[in-house]
Image 1: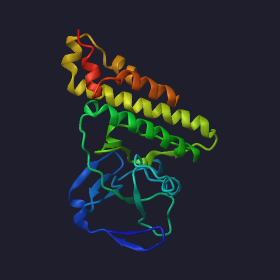
Image 2 (image 1 turned 90 degrees about the vertical axis):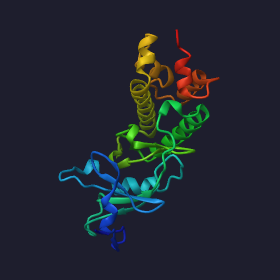
Image 3 (image 1 turned 120 degrees about the horizontal axis):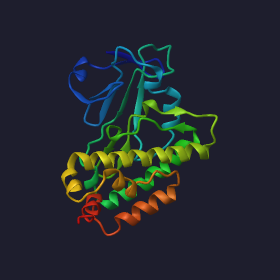
Length: 239
C-alpha cells in the first residue's frame, strides 16, 4: 500500500503486513510491521476526523519524552497534499507482560501512576485533553504502563492548562477505576459474592475520582501499603 510521509516522500507498506492483525479497535487496526515496529491503519468504510490522529497533536506529543507515552515514529498520508489527519502511522512495538491488572506488582503500579501524572502535566501544557482511555488503550510492559492510541485526544484551547490537567487526572483515575472493576468482575466475582463485596466500592477505594494528583498517590499508596499486588489488598477483605 502506498502512503506519503510528512515531507511528501512515498512510503510503500507491503500488503503482506496487513494479513495478520495484532490489535483491532473501533477506528482502525494495528499490524506488526517488524520486530520493533507496528503500523496502525484506519480501515473503516466510514470514519470521522475525531477518530484519526491529528497531525498537530502528533507534533506536540513527539516533543514529550516519556516511557509512559506511545512512541509514534511517523504519520502516513494517502494524499500528500492533505496532512491535517493521518491515514495510518508507524509506532513502536510494545510487548505486554501483565494480562491481569490486579496482579501487577504494587511497586510497579505506584511508580507508573506517579510517572503518568507527571506526563499528564506535560500534555496539559499543550492544552490537550485525553479521551478514549480504557484497558485496550494501555499496555502493561515489563517496566511501564504505556498510554497508546491518542487518536481521539483533542485540543481544548478555551480552558486553562490547570483546568485541563485536573480533567485529565480525573479521566486517568476513572480509567484505572473502570479497569479495576472489570478485572474484579472477570476474574474474582465468586470471591466478591462470597464476601459480600462490591466492585465499585473496591475500585473507588484504590482509585478515587479525583483531580488532585497528590491525593491520588496518597490514597493508592496507603491502601496498598504492605501488599505485593493490588489483588492481595482485595483478598485481605475476606470475612
